[in-house]
Image (tube, rainbow, N blue to C red; front, side, top):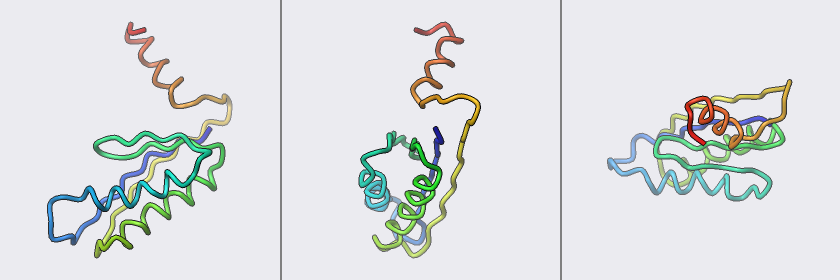
Length: 103
């Protein structure tokens, strides 16, 4: 399953607080019931069965921050799309934790 890491950073907001812009961006994710997502302090991780859906979500997250009033938005995306094996984000984390001796 493709997994996307996306960071939406509004600039030109006249404030050091950006949570309202992030909340607006996150609405683009919550509108897709078929995806799994995890909001972190620095970015959002989104998993979907479709690369196209991830790209649509990314575009909408970016646009939502602009609609909220940000004068400029910087968006960074990393996509992991593994074709040889179907794994979900929890399985990937679990694999690393097992190798660290955590269970």
